[in-house]
Every structure is written in structure tokens, then in C-alpha cells.
Image (cartoon, rainbow, N blue to C red):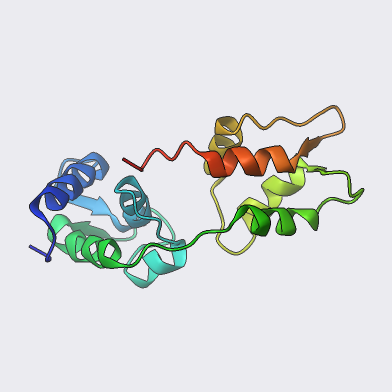
Length: 159
């Protein structure tokens, strides 16, 4: 079945069933990326949209047999190299107006929800919560500490 080990097919079936909110054997295509991420694969929104993910919930649904080849394709992809500490620091320095290692939390949130690979506000809130990132009285935070905690994990989808 889709050229996957049987344990991976079973794992995909379990995740699919969790997202089958109406218990009809179908999942809204809006959740393709969420299902893949639940399976430990880091697919971008653009990659998922190429494979049928919809921009809004309620537009289209798929059966497990339709999801399995998508999962198989992502499962076989080589692991991606994500940004390094240096990459993150270089990018965030652009927002460090005083060159003191601090940036606006509101500005970070705006960048994450509005640019390129947009994150839902709930995901940004989860990242900030899991890294224990809080702004000071001036609305700033130390982005070096944030990046260190971000790269440290936890990564809930990893075994």
C-alpha cells in the first residue's frame, strides 16, 4: 500500500482517523499539512497546496486511500536542512533597531503570521509559550535566548 512499511501505514491511518472529525472516512483537505506534521514530516503550506491542500476548510475532502500516496511521497523525501543558529540570528538582527540583542515581540509575531510561509497565530503563540518568550515593559525580548530555546526543542513529532 503506497510503498510504505506497514507500521507507517498504521501510523498514518491513526492520524487520519483523528482528523476525520465527522467519522465518515474522509478528512478535509485543509488539514493535509497538519496530518503530515503530526506524522513528523515538515511540509510547507506551498508543498501541501501543490498536493491538494485547500486554503479554507470545507472546500474538499479526501479518503485515506487518497492521503496515503501524499504521505508516502513526503516520507520518502530527504530530510530538509532547516535554518541554523547563525541563519536565525542574521535574520532577526534586521529587526534589532538598537543593536542590543532585543527586538519587538509584536514585530516578530507580525513577521511570522504575515510573510512568506505564514504561520497561524495559534502556532506563533505555541512557539512563544514553548520557548517561554515574554516581552519586557518596552515590548522587547532577547532574540538570542529565543533562538537558542527554539533550536533546542522540544520537537513533539520526533521520536
